[in-house]
Length: 505
Image (cartoon, rainbow, N blue to C red):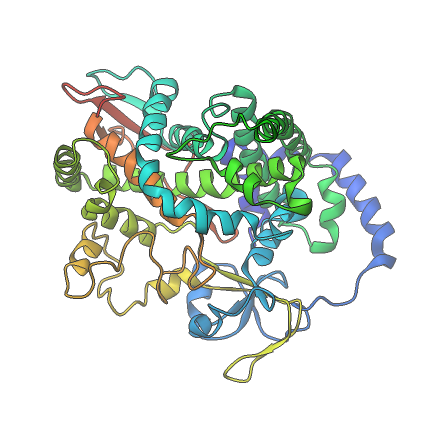
């Protein structure tokens, strides 16, 4: 849990927590509500009934207790040892749920993410409909990325020009995600872009802020948090944008005039085809589509920004990676289905960047829907929510002899070993690499995220030289709770390379 002192200093997405913390109106109101609610205290939660030590939030404590069951700062987080990964990774969702645990961690009631727990529609479509079509998606992603760069990037010429790296990347990624999620008809609509960007921004603000309060206080606090109000507004905006589109497509289906895109049907259309019952309600489809932008746009942008910062911190890799991208694109005569799979050095660099600068210290979240006794006799009651300390665990991977050293081609060399050609990729998981989960319920969108990141970084390498401003080193990450965000105010400088244009190749 973040400290009060650190939370006062947070400037994430221009998040200004300080005025909220020091507003007399807010605190007097919360005190009154807290006093009135004392008789309503609920009995112990399942996490509270687990009698294990509570340790501090610092990374050193997480590493020190990695082989034991413990609680982090309070009862919200019960940390399981990573030795249970293989034991739990394929347990059925009706016994052990990753989606319920993740939405609870994301303050689902207040961030609107609880819609993802109503069914597995989105994960089923991503896994069975979208991922198998990733090949035809490459030209579509490349086309939208080229357009996004003309809209979002400043007019960069032959002189060095500074840009806010994370802000630029998240705007580029949000446009690409919109093309894949809602299709060409709507992806460039400012109504939709405003809703999706605003939702992502305010959802993270709400998550960060609400988690500093005890569980029983959050319902009261949320009523005074403007970021929660804005989530509801952006949800309304998304429904206003998507519901007419859904209605039009359904009318065309009924009339037999709907024309399908033979190359790719966007996620909204694919979910509409699969949805039944409550899932098929237009407001539900719109809400689910909006909520998915939280995972797709933001986590993809975080990984891409960290890799860009690593390129500027380790410029010795730039020429080698640029040469790989140029050779592969020339060989394939453009960005094709096979192009991204050939970018083994770039894939290694992105994976190593994530290892050194992970999005979270914790992961492998699970909600126990049934009580369970683990292999060592540990009893976990029904209703408990658990996590694992995945970042310290990855640093103990025996295949990484020098984990404290950044080696951008580490995984490239590992894949050259016999029998390892398809292992050690950014999008693959294993018992030591758990950022996307592991097993049957690993993140279904990780392959798409990998493609978007490689396309984005590959195009930046082809078009621009890059560096940190002369007076600036690598921007310090922003650490809040277990999250590890790239600094949103960190700048990089770009310079257009001779003969390059933003939307070429």
